[in-house]
Amino acid sequence: MRNEFSEGVFRTLAGADGPAADLSETAARAEGANGLRHTASLSMTKVADGLIDPKLVLSWLMQALGAPAVLVGMLVPIREAGALLPQLGLAAWVGRLRHKKWAWVVGSLGQGSAAAVIALVALTMEGGLAGGLICAALAVLAVSRAACSVSFKEILGKTVGKSRRGAVTGTAGSASSAAVLVFAGILIWQGSSQPLVIGAIGLAAVLWICAAGLFATLNEEPSETDDRGGMPRLSLLWEDRNFLRFIITRGLLVGTALAPPYLVVISERAELDQLGALIVASAAASLLSSYVWGRMSDRSSRKVLMLAGIVAAVALFAGIGLAQAGYGGVPYVMPAVLFILMIAYHGVRQGRSTYLVDMAPKDQKAAYAALANTVIGTLLLIAGIGGGLASLISAQAALAVFGAMSVGGAVAAYTLDEVE
Image (tube, rainbow, N blue to C red; front, side, top):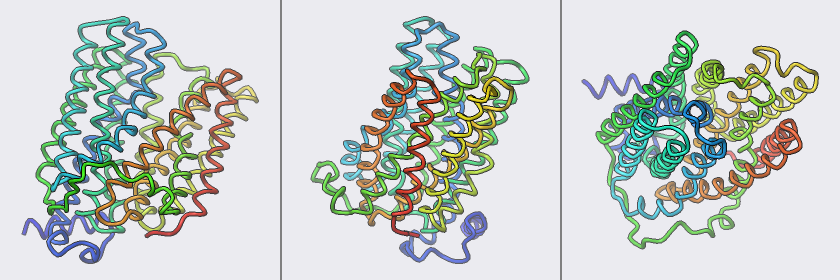
């Protein structure tokens, strides 16, 4: 009865009207319960991500602790590149596991432990020492996240049918965004304070650990193991031309992740007391768009990437125009632009994730994900440096670079094959 209930709930959530045709008989019977476990676990980890967001929360905390600006500036590169670059090596480890869920469980426990260390450091230290230790803990968190990322797509592909996977990630994104909005509301109501922010980071640690426990109960069929110990073949990049076009598309769309700090700069309202409002803009965009993007991705993740690139370009060039017209410091103008940009950002995230899972051959999803993420990690560093150099001219110049990249990403997405 319990399986029938969970199957009914999941099919309603995913808009499915029958068993998944691309799963084994055993996996299809467990799909409902597994889909709900995926949704709940992802919701907890996404809430944790919002509570410890390096772009907003950790940057605020580091400034409040008196950490040097150079360390504050390292937070986003550590988090983004650290979560992507190790994946090529981690894929070999994941390939040797018969049950891939244990890689995700270990990664979630690692993130929870690192978040707990960050909270402890913030409670007991300050200045450069606190900043250095927080950066080190964030690096551990990022590598742990890489283990989750490189294993998740293969786990999802084995346990949830095609045309329902976007609903899982989209629902988790929207549910977690609602929780983060509550956090932002508390910050606005009570005012940003170190105890409140540190408490939120401690809660993030608990959520990651709970998610690991729940994910460990996933019903996953054993996989064929790869005992060769090698990394995914780089030759995949030219053997699968559509995969190469996907990486180019995703690389051009990284500007959606790198642009937000520059919008904050041109808003001329980057004071510490704006933390709650910034989190509201980011979380509200996810809440309102993640599920919609997820369902759209189940129909055509290629078109989602195209549309997200166009929306991002419109937001970025609108931000430049408003700043040039003297509206940069007007309350709520740039937060509104940030809101639209974050809608595009979540579209890119949903579209790229669903496209890769549906495109990659069975039993090679981890290899495809690891190779793609390693390349994108490198491109993030290059694009980040490029944006930084452009910002020496002005923040608007950096935004123009990212806007042009978004246009290019939309055009590149048009050349992709349909995989749904």
